[in-house]
Length: 191
Image (tube, rainbow, N blue to C red; front, top):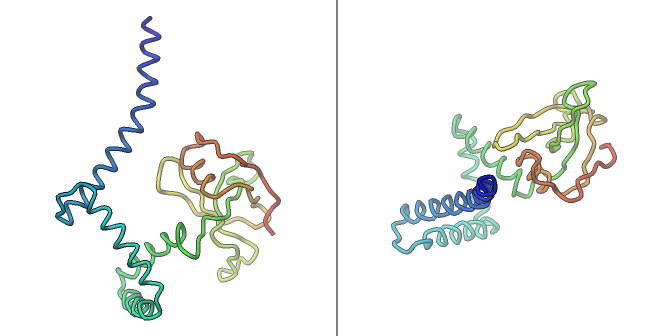
């Protein structure tokens, strides 16, 4: 009887904890944005923020606005600390959602020479000719349950492409291998 009670309790935690955490974070985001804008209607500030960001995205496609943005970017690229912060943030966001996505080539690598361990990662540069390593690629290895990772350099012949959706591979890595993405299989080696 006690064992069954404990089992139900633990299943309840497994079900409710992620749900409660998700709801808590969403409510905090909504109330924080509403507080910044001073809007008394819950969630209205979030909707307005999404609409404004979408409007800026639409305006960024126009020729005149793009020219103005290029001028602003050139100014930001000349300021020492600001350049580092701005360009790093811009490149990171472009890697995930921009026109120059970088995390779209999932691969399997052996992080230790001669070892049997394998790691999943993403090719971010297909040639390092500028560094004198034309036959090498860069592979980013995200960490599980973290927003960090490691960038390693491998010979292209040591990298095996993975036939799976990159978002599923990222979810698999970040979840510590708990998420089981469909279609996770090795393909031919990269050229």
